[in-house]
Image (cartoon, rainbow, N blue to C red; front, side):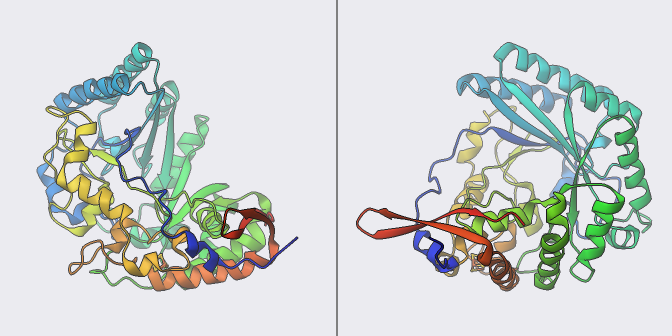
Length: 406
Ligand code: SF4
């Protein structure tokens, strides 16, 4: 029988022990092919830490070879059947093509020797994409994700080159080259809360033709005092829910919010409970925690681990990596008592950071997230079908069977 379900009920599970205390075996590495970029986005987290300039401009040959050796050892030691690498930067396509091909050959050889499938992706601004890159991506089955913030005026306000010129036209040209080669990229946008999300959706879906993508809040900590994102995401949700969802359009962060609100795991970097166990390979071979934590400032992610001396799994003992992992699983008291804990998870780890209390804070977007969750809940609650089960001594436990498809 349908029954009113309150998000507050989820708070009953706020102390649930599904967050692992132990570090899992790594199955993903973010590989920094370049520590420099060919453009100069105004909101970029990467160059807020001057330490990146001390690293080689591109992944050194020695570090690449050592990484491949460590990766094969890791796969064998843990008998892994699948591993994921995402090539990243800076701008990863600053890495020379011939070296990229050599790297892929090494990875293919590991794949053949171990039987482990090494999945690969690249995140790029698409400006350097040409037919030769497309051939490489096709030959080595590399998934491509492109950063586009919306129509030209919105994109060009923030994604600029070193002369201050917008990069929209060059990025769209790169997408066109990919599609001419038969490659369909993914898309990631960073929202500008001062703009109209309806225009972004109309452009991304109706003009560029993307149906599955993500729109993210700008990276920020409590030291940045960023503008609220509530009005933007509320309108984004409404426009998507009322118009685009029924056309099969999916926006990952909105999907994650809904999943969290109906009692499932919100699988998203932006929001959601869960340990942050990302390992980042830097261009000098060092192994660091989640790269976005670099937004905190100089040297904030620097570690003592390097693939030339350490196994991949060794990074778990590094104080910086360990600190980030433990911070991701130890929420502040405010979040632990929050009705939206399961959906929000305290927000992105970097967005929790303040000079005074480290990561022991709610998200800098907390007030916005609460308004957004309130709004989404009000809109989806009438569409939910609830099944009531009796469990244990505590009596009835509510389970959401499904949310009616929007
Ligand atoms: S950041 Fe705010 S909305 Fe998110 S869990 Fe913490 S208190 Fe709740």
